[in-house]
Image (cartoon, rainbow, N blue to C red; front, side, top):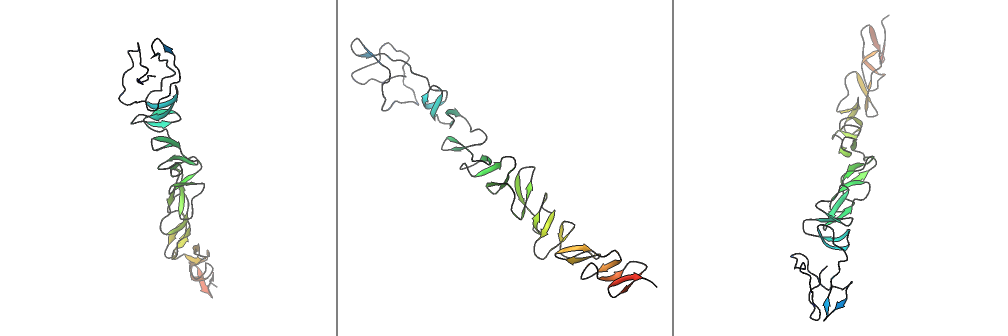
Length: 220
C-alpha cells in the first residue's frame, strides 16, 4: 500500500512507491501507521491484491477487476466458468435447472441432466407438439402432421386435424386393406381384401371367399 502526500505528512525512504496507471487512491483511510521524526509516515503493507484485481478486500478476494476480466467468487478471470453468466463483468451462477444461461441467470441455453430445453426454459417433459431429443437435451418440434410425437419428429402418436394415424405415421387416406376407426387406420378382417367403413365390413374378399352382406364366406 502507498499513501500520497497530504500536506502534513510525506513518504520517506520508500523508493518503490510510484504512481500506477490504473490504480488511484480516493478517500483513502490510514489503517496502519506511526509517526517518526518530523512527521514522516512509515508505510506497512497489509496485503497485496490478487492478480488482475482493480480493488480487493483481502489478499485473496477481489471486489473489482481490471478491464478485460470478470469477477467470479472473489477472483478475476478472463471468462466465466460453465454454469455462470457474465452480468456487468460479474459472473452470476445460472439458476437450476439451467446448466448454462445468457443475459440473466434464469434464461437457459442448456439444461442439467433429466431436463429438456424448450425455448429458454428447462422442463422435465416436453409439451404436446414437441419430442424429447436425448442427444442434446432439447424439446424439438414434431412434424406438421403430428400433434403428439416421440423420439423423432415423424414418430406420431396423435395426428393433426385432417390426418389419420397408421403405423405411427400421419397420412391423408387409409391404405386399401384398412379402414378408418377413431382417427386411425385399422387392418381389415383377415377374410376381407378391402373394407369400409369399419374393419369388419368387407367390400371385397380374399381368393376363395364370396362377399355376402358385408361378410366374406366360403364358397358353397
